[in-house]
Image (cartoon, rainbow, N blue to C red):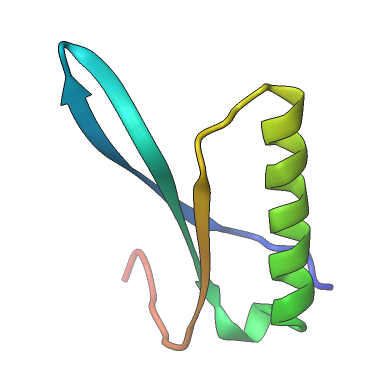
Amino acid sequence: MKPISRIVISFQPKENIINNNLIIPQIEIFIRMSEHKIEDLEKLFGEVKENLSKWKKENSFETPINLKIIPMKGKFEVNI
């Protein structure tokens, strides 16, 4: 798998506030990256999922996490 030069992760907790306590029923993680940098989407998804699961276990983090990896096709330039 090619090294990833840039990855954009959008962390969007869905939250409820009950009696001044923050309750987070689930966390949504969206990863958008260039389609041409993904050699094997299933393998990439499995690696991210495995690392998230490992982190949750090591930190006793019980909130469910929903994961989406979205390959993007497009072109952009900066500093024109």
